[in-house]
Length: 263
Image 1 (cartoon, rainbow, N blue to C red):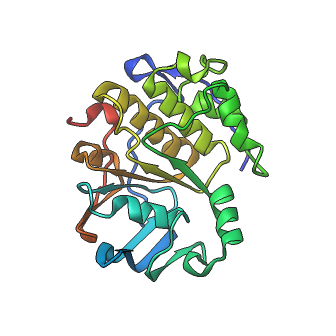
Image 2: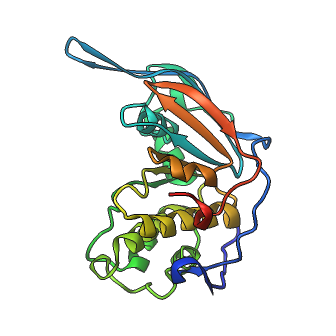
C-alpha cells in the first residue's frame, strides 16, 4: 500500500480532519479477513475452571468496523487477544487469510502480529522520553512498507503535535498517538481494547472519530471492544457477548457519525 500524504481540515471539537464524513453502506458482505469457529478458552486456576469463551463464532470482513459489546467478564478481551495472536484458544480455530493461527508456531505468530495487526489499548504505552513522531517511528522501523510517521499523525489530527512529548499532550492526544503508532505499519486489521475507557466523553469522541477516519480513509478492518452501548451506532456490525458466548449480532445498514451518537 502506498504511503498517504494527507491534507487536514478542521472538524469536530476543532480537531483536524481529512475529509467530510460521508455515511457509507455496510461492508459486511465483503470477503472475510478473520473466521473464528467454535472458539473456546478455559483458564485453570488450581481446582477452579474459568470458561472465558464458550464456543464463539466470529468473522470480520475487509474494511468492516465491528463493535464487540458486553459487560466486564463477557469474554471480549479474551477474544480480541486470540484474534491478535496474543493468546491461543483451548479449542476451535481462527483463520486469517487462509492461515490457521491456532496451529501457527511462535515465529509465525510474531510475524503475524508485526506485519498484519495493529493494537490500541486503553492505556497508551508511549515512551515518555520520545516525541509523538519518535514514538510512531519506532514501529515503522520494524516493517517493510510503513506509512511516514508524520502522515500517520496527521491522519489522527496531530499534525501540529509532531514534536511534543507525551507529558505535553492531553490523554486524548496521547491515545491518538497510540492509534497513529498502530496504523503506521499499515496493518490489515486494527484491534482496539476499550480505547476510550480512560477518557471523558468529549475526549473519547475525538478518539472515536480518529478510529472512524482510519477505517474510512485507509479501509482498515477495525474491531473495537467496549461496554459502552452508545458507541455501537458507529459500527457496520455489533456483536454482543455475555458469559463467554455471542448472544446477539446486529448488522447496521447505515453508520452513524460520532457527533450524532447518543451518549
